[in-house]
Amino acid sequence: MKVCRVERRLPYAALLCTLHAAGATEDEYPPRHEAASRCELSREHDGPHIAHLYSRGTDPELWAQWEGEDDEIRFVHHLPCVEPSPHADPIHRWACTLPADHDGGHSWEAEGYDIGPDEGPLYVP
Ligand SMILES: [Zn+2]
Ligand SMILES: [Zn+2]
Image (cartoon, rainbow, N blue to C red; front, side, top):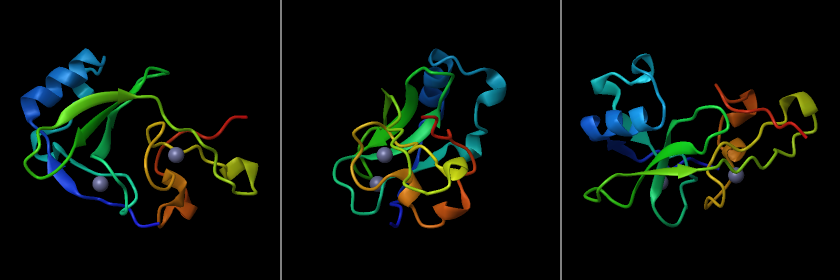
């Protein structure tokens, strides 16, 4: 599948407040010029765009969610989908990193994903 990748700049002050509230430390804050996110859902998705911001341990992950160009960014918490990829090799069986109940394909269905994600949980049965 192709990924939506619609980009949206994030309100920096609100982003830092939200990260702080989620337990992020200062060295985990993004620099101001990188305070933008790209939608990680598949290109044909319904509903709002969504981009991962922060995760800590087993807490629900922090995501930025927005409808359109002029819609206000909402910071929302979601547990991950964790649907395992059907890849035969159990060592490369990645869990979906998108929010639970997300629309469209799983993260491991994205183009280029077959080389493995940069980060993200391995599926542990
Ligand atoms: Zn999108
Ligand atoms: Zn999924």
